[in-house]
Image (cartoon, rainbow, N blue to C red; front, side):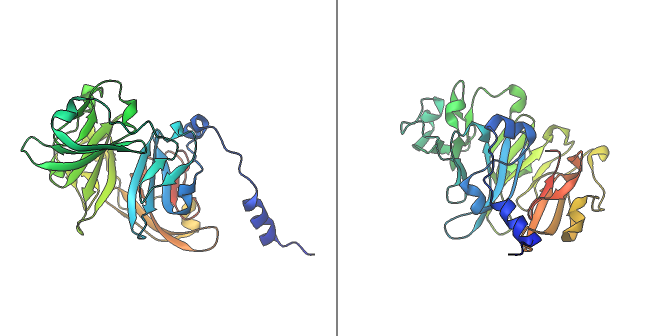
Length: 281
């Protein structure tokens, strides 16, 4: 039987993948294996956090992330639009902490602490804290948001107009994370690296955190960057810190994809099976 090049490629893709350990995968910047890959796209990692766009049970897409993903001892799964370690079940008892004085409806579910917490104005907010058992000290209510009190002082969330339309705001290692409302009223997981370089307001730009005024040497121009992705992507454009394109996967299908803060890529920008990615991450 004549073996075609196409059959050889399919055969190579079907071979079992040798899994790296979590720590090695993180160090090399490779996205980890897991059942989430079947229902998530735009998968990437950035500074120890796994980001993806995942479908919920109704087929709606959600921006989601999982910190310290390499600590997962088993599968990483898509739990109704949220990335989750399938093996993280520290117990059904909610942890102690000062947050209990101003929060209620407290519960844990598969490694995440959920609660309804009161802010300084007496308003109530649905909030959650992933991997809460990693907190080394108190768990507190920070103006309606669950937070580990052992965060460094310089990791406190900054002021800005984004606070009026964002929730679950937190910082980690110089990056600001939040879920922000877009013009359609949907909340999207977003983050802003190097938020301390913002000289003015931090704003919610249609569901995306953005410096309203960034230092000139941090601002990219409007020209799409060079990279190997250009050979298999189309409709390429940039808009306010983000590179957009429609990129072809291994089966020849095109996917809408984007890469935030693309100018931080130190090497090539590539098309990774229909997803834009920095090859140096």
